[in-house]
Amino acid sequence: MFEAESEIERESMPVDVLFVGGGPACLAGALHLMDLIEKHNEGVAAGTIEGEEYDEPMIGLIEKGSEIGSHGISGAVLDPRALDELIPDWKDDSSFPLERYVEREAMLMLADEERGFPLPFMPPEFHDHGKPIVSIAKFQKWLGEKAEEKGVMVFPGFAGVELLYDEDGKCNGVRTGDKGVGPNGEQKDNFEPGMDLESPVTILGEGPRGHLARILMNKYGLQEGRNEMGYETGCKEVLEFPEGTIKDGFVYLLAGYPLQNIFGKGPFGGGFIYSMGGDRVCIGLLATLDAEDPGMDVHYLLQKTKMHPKVREILAGGKVIKYGAKAVTVGGWGCMPKLYAPGAMIVGDSASFLNAARIKGIHLAMKSGMLAAETAFEAMKSGDNSETAMAKFKEAIDASWVREEMEPTKNFHAGFANNGMVGGTIKFGLSKIFGSGEIEKLHADHEGMKKVSEFHASGKLPEQSAPGKYPDLEYDGTYIIDKLTDVYLSATKHDEHQPCHLKVADTEICATKCAEEYGNPCERFCPAQVYNMVMNEEAGRKELQVDFSNCVHCKTCDIRDPYQIIQWVPPEGGDGPEYGIL
Ligand SMILES: Cc1cc2nc3c(=O)[nH]c(=O)nc-3n(C[C@H](O)[C@H](O)[C@H](O)COP(=O)(O)OP(=O)(O)OC[C@H]3O[C@@H](n4cnc5c(N)ncnc54)[C@H](O)[C@@H]3O)c2cc1C
Image 1 (tube, rainbow, N blue to C red):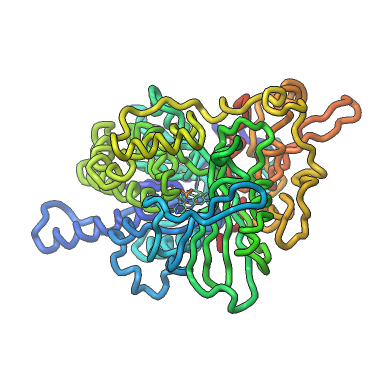
Image 2 (cartoon, rainbow, N blue to C red):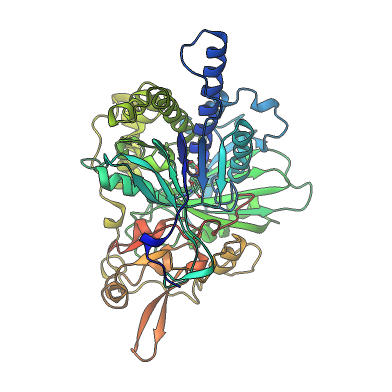
């Protein structure tokens, strides 16, 4: 059954402040806002603050994952700076989901396929001794429970799909996605219209390449005159070992092979191996999405990393039990958009709050959420949600330790993107002595890819033996894993009878121009084997098949597609990966 949009009856729910995304940014923001309201109420009751008490503040938070944390993937070594401010006694809280504290750390330089050595020193940015290692999925769940205890209305399983505006054009909340819609837009028996969550202040913390954040940025020109955001994609696996094998908290950072090292070309990036609780260890690899090689496949590069003898030494005996992938916003301060518009603010990775020099974003995401919450509370009290009122958020960021940490590294990503590993390292070193200067210009990631004929002397991409499999790897299903098996380990599921949430504007380009020029790089860059060129015997050519049910919501395709004809939009709320322990 089709009902015209204008005939659909939607429930509206007014809230005071709405957070979009159940990541560290919004969860910390929502919790901090409840704390501010509590303190305000106490002050009013004690007569030390003028004003009215907020008896039943309506603070809402929506998350597209089926639970808070389902879509959470990170390293994660946590810099506890923001957490110390938000929950000062977290170390004494027995429910805190600590995996381990970092007790030893090293940086492994992998020179080539065989050789590697620990660096005699670690750059200061990477010192993590004593910091907690967490599973971000569990950390988010813990923060979500704290937020609910404080009275935040947490709605998991609800994706924000549209921004709402009031009659003055100010952002006025979010519409959540309809559920029970068939592949062609028809309403199924279980059809449930999305809700309008109306809010004078909307805080968008959707992580990298946020869907609504981008709509807001386009409407208000928030990225105009600034660098496009820069991204890497990270693939991560968790390995389980026999009981009693993993005895301490360790961190290995991986540099060089199979990514760019001082001897040669290749995508820029880095890797990590962290020990977790329960005899588990995770390994992850991040590679830049402006890589020149149209055949770059981060999942393959992660498997290559595990083949390295120095890495095998650490991971011997482990069995891969979990997989996930996600883009990371690495452009930092040098790519930050304008952070606000009338009635709205953007926080966390959606606004580039990540320090790529340390590969850390959780603490910055949290602090940005908390400062946005302070601006939101001022707006609640004054009733002013104008652009000028929202601009206080940027002032607060500039006056905080976020700027102190991020501003000096503003050209870190651009330095490497524009000058390669050696040039980037020298530039970053010099910036520490002479300052980081002006923001360096940076191309958009999708402009970085070269055509196959320009990059590969053979004029062809390296052969795959099957989708997501390469002939130089010995897949054993426990340690070296093909892409589709890893997708299975991500526990991703989508109702297949819904509209495809990966909107390819022109599939004719895929079958013709893209096949010739770039060799259909989507088959490689997607870390979940969503895109497959399949033979159409009648047409006598390969055509694109989008297996959207594999999608792990990493956003890589939306960023790296050289023609920019793929748009990622949220699928039905509750669908997607179930990361749980990542
Ligand atoms: C492989 C990897 C390793 C990393 N290692 C580290 C590390 O060791 N230490 C560190 O500090 N940082 C690390 N980071 C970065 C860190 O994870 C991020 O900076 C941080 O998670 C950003 O938090 P956020 O709240 O902004 O976004 P996210 O954590 O991405 O959370 C956003 C949430 O919003 C939800 N969402 C998105 N769109 C919508 C929508 N439209 N409607 C409803 N919900 C929506 C998503 O499902 C998600 O749960 C790593 C990242 C990766 C990928």
